[in-house]
Image (tube, rainbow, N blue to C red; front, top):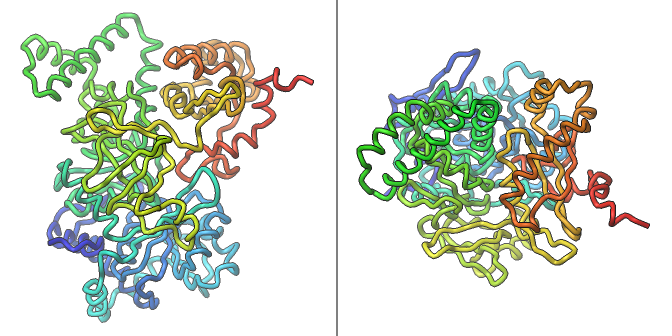
Length: 598
């Protein structure tokens, strides 16, 4: 029986698949690869070097870095010596990082760059437990009295003298060992560290085994932050089954990289699919009537063809012929835009509009949307190639229970649920009662057992007329627009729904050029009557998909995006509604002039 410990599982993979490529990273325009045998050696070297620093079981070791293979070496090396990994988002501010370093009483911290090293060093006197900072990038200027470059650190792990001690650590390892403390970015309040054991994470492997076929020959693209449990557990799974992981440190290059490496499997967030969908449809807007007609015909043919396959029904000769033509002219080109055919895509972290799911399905690309939370390791439910329904987040993963309270809140119980929040007994007691984790999400099951998510309880807008509105639904409808980068619905205790809109500035400038609108400054551009009218028409079109009380009555265009530095975004790029409401109070109030009359 497989030992439920991540380090032991990956160690076995490094032996079983030793000659296969485990990972690749692009350096100076060339992809550099490491075999599974080399991955195993790299992990052991880091583990021995950590032993040389006297790291003990249960010690908290931090990783403050963008995605890179060294992130994984540090992670798995720490788990090998039974340490506890504490990831910190590379985009966190010095104060956000300091909070995590202090609360976890971190001993050792890996950082990637001069910028993040300087963030830590600027507050170094606040961290009495932090003995060593190890820097991945070789060009960083460091204080050698309390810091090491990664290459120097590795030299202390080259000797095999500690191999017996290393083997003993893994022999003593238990499934209920704490593996990681992951701080939820939280759209409200201070961050909380979810404590996840090896058994919690292992449960996700069993869930994936039950429904997905991934193994040697598959290629994954690792571009979501490894600090997030979603990408991190998926990467563990990739290594467990002998597939290949391709690391991307710059998420902005994801579509170009997909076209280059042609991943066969990968996990993502809805924003990737929204951007592809929006780009395709934006191209259509400027196309001829014939081009539009051909495109929609091809999508209809593709949809009919795929649904017959899904339902295991015969495909007639005429439809086969039509599909061959539609695929050659249109559908294959959409697949090529995301790197060709896939075993499956995965979407999580935010809702994906059903129309986008159906669009990709028609082209032969299945997006398996799921639902999860950091506190649940993360998966609670998922759509799978054998059981999917668009507009839902799928059926429950194996051995996981969910019940819905009278007010619609989703409660979760199972081997995936965390042990609690680190050093926060009060918050843990509020969140976990009788083994049930209170998610704060509102949802319901349909008659076939598929789960639908409505919104976060705290996000619900209650208008002054007493209407309960889920902003998530409005935002999901609008998010597929090529000309909109960020959008937030407003309206709590107000008479109607309004919105703050951050345009897709590149697309807006192209529009301005085509309309011969001067682009002196972005501030002037967003106030130009033609631009305002253009966005009004788009919002009116989107509002046709919404109920009357959900429709956006007024909006304001913003000249700069919401950013993490001002507290408006979480590290996972979710909008903090409360902060935005405070930062833009004057603009929001101006959209409700009748409420401000003397």
